[in-house]
Amino acid sequence: MPDDTDPKHTPAMPEDAPPGTTATEELDPWEELELEAAKWKEISLRTAAEMDNLRKRTARDREEAIRYANQRLLEELLPVIDNFEMGMAAAAQDQSSMIYIGMDMVRRQLNDFLSSQGVEEIPTTGNFDHNLHDAVAQEDCPAGEEGRILRVTRRGFRLRDRLLRPAGVVVSRLPTTAPPTAPPTAPPTAPPTAPPTEAPTEAPTPPAEN
Image (cartoon, rainbow, N blue to C red; front, side, top):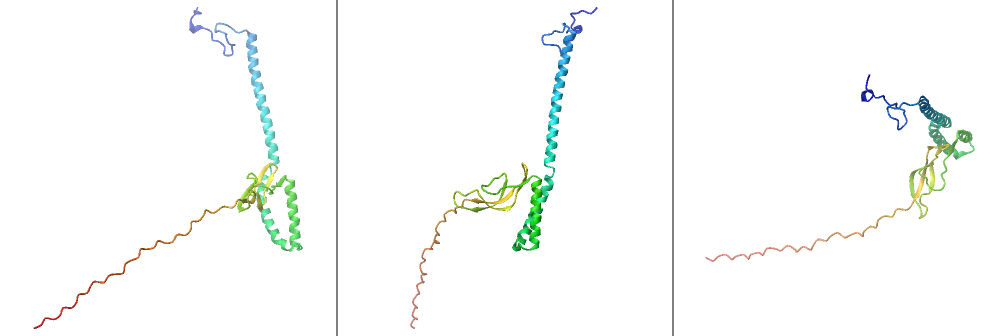
């Protein structure tokens, strides 16, 4: 018969035994069932919470995909609208012509289509906003008027709360002051030079008498 005091034959303590339980103590079957039930209850609650988060995230992604399903199409349509408006500006010289009248009808239909898709034009009045506007140029203005939008070079749009394209604008700025210029300096004058001195000439010697 093996010795109970031998560590090789000491019964192992269950992994889910409560604190303070020694290896020689045996858990009551009901306690073991309660521990097992508590463990599976915790697992089931955690799994249910993860499934609920997954369901909410899937519903949110599906709703967002429906709301912004036409975003790519609208982004590619904006350059076409820009070219169309350039053509309207050229045809506006004779607003009584059938060409201008027909193009104006198409323009209204395009605006109605954009509105039905949740597209709004970005306002371009007031101060410059780097989140909505794209400054393509700057012009000098009086003091206190810097940062204001002077004119629009390209319309901007947003789809609900998403920016499709910023508006291109010209922004005012304070005049740049040129650095003071130094007065022109006269070129350095060369010191006066003395006139060249001629070498003294020797008097001719008279011829010798015979």
